[in-house]
Structures are given as C-alpha cells and as structure tokens.
Length: 256
Ligand SMILES: *[C@@H]1O[C@H](CO)[C@@H](O)[C@H](O)[C@H]1NC(C)=O
Ligand SMILES: *[C@@H]1O[C@H](CO)[C@@H](O)[C@H](O)[C@H]1NC(C)=O
Ligand SMILES: *[C@@H]1O[C@H](CO)[C@@H](O)[C@H](O)[C@H]1NC(C)=O
Ligand SMILES: *[C@@H]1O[C@H](CO)[C@@H](O)[C@H](O)[C@H]1NC(C)=O
Image (cartoon, rainbow, N blue to C red; front, top):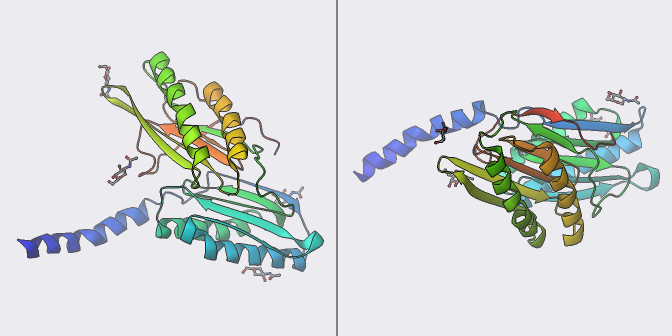
C-alpha cells in the first residue's frame, strides 16, 4: 500500500513538471517601458550589467532585491520583486526571464520597467527607492462583466480597504483577500507594494490605484492595475495559481 502510494507520486511528478513548463505563466511580459536611450556608452552598460546580475542573485532568496552600481552620471539603481506568494524557484525563473528580456526589449535604455504575472523589474539612473511612483499605471481586464454588477462592486469595494491596510502594515507588503459574491461566485484579490516603500508611501500608492480600480475596473470580473510601486488585482478565477489571460482595458494616468 505504502509502496504503491510512493510509486504513484513518482510517476505523477514528471507530468506535473511538464504541465508547469508548458503553461508558462510569465512567457510574455504584461507590459514594459524603455526611456533615457544612450548610444554605445560602455560605462552605463557596465553599471546596467552589474545591477542586473546582482538583482538576479539577490531577488529569489527574499522575493525582493535592490542594487546600484556606478558613479555620478553612470549610476544605475535597480529593483526587482516577485509576487508575494511564490517560492524561490518560481521567483528565480521570472527574474531570470526579466533580466534577459529587458536587454532585448530595451537594449540602449538607462530607464526601464518590465512587468510579468510573477515579477517586476525596474532600473533607472536616478535613485527612486522609497518613492511612491504611480507613473506607468496601466489597467488590464478580461473584459467579462458581472451578471449582478451592483452586488459585485459592493463586495469588491468592501474588501479593498482592509486588503490595502493589511499590505501596508506588513513587511512583505503583500496581501490576499477572498470573498463570496454569491453562492457560486468567489472573488480573489491581491495588493502588493514594492518593499522599498515605507507604510505611508505604500498607502499613497495603493490609494491612487484604488481610485483607478473603482473607476476603470468597475463591474469587470477580472482586473489588474499595475504601476511602478504597487499593483492591485482581483478576479473570479484563481489567478494566483494559474495564468489568466487579460487584455489591455484602458491605458490610464500614464506619463510614459
Ligand atoms: C553587458 O552584458 C552583455 C550581455 O551579457 C554583453 O554582451 C556586453 O558586452 C556587456 N557590456 C559591458 C559594457 O559590460
Ligand atoms: C529608445 O530605444 C527603444 C528601444 O530600442 C526604441 O524603441 C525607442 O524608439 C528609442 N527612443 C528614442 C527616443 O530614440
Ligand atoms: C451562478 O448562479 C446564477 C444564479 O443562480 C446562475 O444564473 C449562473 O448561471 C450560475 N453561474 C455558474 C457559473 O454556475
Ligand atoms: C492554490 O493552490 C494551492 C494548492 O492547490 C491551494 O492550497 C491554495 O489555496 C490555492 N490558492 C488560492 C488562492 O486558491
């Protein structure tokens, strides 16, 4: 009995890995932005290379990392973070992908940001750590609308405040809330700030995104609002365990 149980697990494992690798939740970035282009500057490229290597080494261990290299005009400040519910391997896979892909997408940019389902990477020539930054705010949605929009919206607005307060108050700057909208509809939501932010800065960022949330996301069954310092997301599917495809709903409030 015990033997066959072990055998079963042994046989099942390769299948599970196969499924995870074919259903790659972060195959494509959700969004990216490049600016401050430079022309063949080895010093700045060297700072970028060192920052990316350092972030790749640091981030998976703690789901968060900041780094900076270079002096004066050639300084680069970088930050990367994984979604708060991921393990070291999941985080490492996403940060690896992000550090590779940013080189392809923004080859000569000294200011870049890239968002995936599982992680976020940002570097710049100015020291942005600790500043709540809601530039590059973008809204993504599944496009499906609730059958009972009033109840749905009421339940959603009811959980946003305690969810944000919880994310603000803990070191992980990440919180998840689940609520039943009706007998057969469960709403899952998450809030996350980058961990360089203090409580006040995190609250300011989430407050700003909550306004966008209640305006643009209204009545949609799934919605994801991203920015440089925090993200808010909700949905009726289990987006924390499985990848859910969303399309841009509207590009809001972005100084791009
Ligand atoms: C930066 O890294 C890229 C990719 O590994 C490499 O091709 C390039 O030579 C490096 N540049 C500098 C200045 O270190
Ligand atoms: C900067 O570089 C990016 C990526 O290579 C490119 O798409 C963009 O057009 C460039 N912007 C300017 C102002 O040159
Ligand atoms: C959920 O319940 C409502 C009302 O009973 C029904 O109209 C709807 O089809 C149900 N949805 C699903 C996914 O079962
Ligand atoms: C994700 O899956 C795990 C394991 O199946 C489960 O324990 C967890 O509750 C799920 N997360 C959510 C948010 O449903």
